[in-house]
Image 1 (spheres, rainbow, N blue to C red):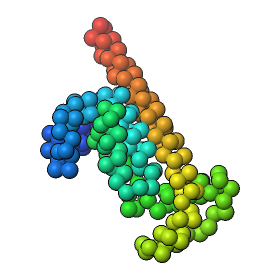
Image 2: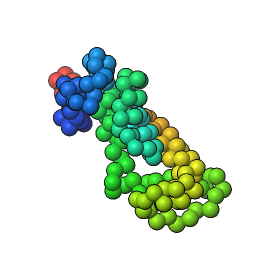
Image 3: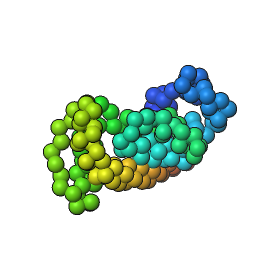
Image 4: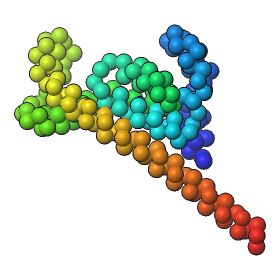
Length: 176
């Protein structure tokens, strides 16, 4: 599996994560090797966890994803990395889509929003759109989480089938 090797080279190793100063408080919990192995179960669970928290509009999405990954013993680096689907470049459009989806489902009118990092904006605009934003975000989080989970399973299965086919071809060449 070339993808697995590439992914392993991109992710931090277990010891680097365990020694991270912000995660030391977790102690022996971080010694569970399941959270760092690239297995179908751990990658699918880590993907689902990371994608879910990527669409939740709260600060500390990565920390929440890491804590849930630890609780469910799924791949911790994958969970943390996928929370960055929402990053400074994608957050505004994705959360606006979430707001529009939530407003539509709740039957609220969709208002154009001008974002300002001020307390007045938070008290005025954010408090008015919060129910629609949370509703849309939870729907996007759930759908992307489920899609990510099954996509990892599908891709893994395809890779295994491809590996078996390659073995069959190699055996046929040897037998001839």
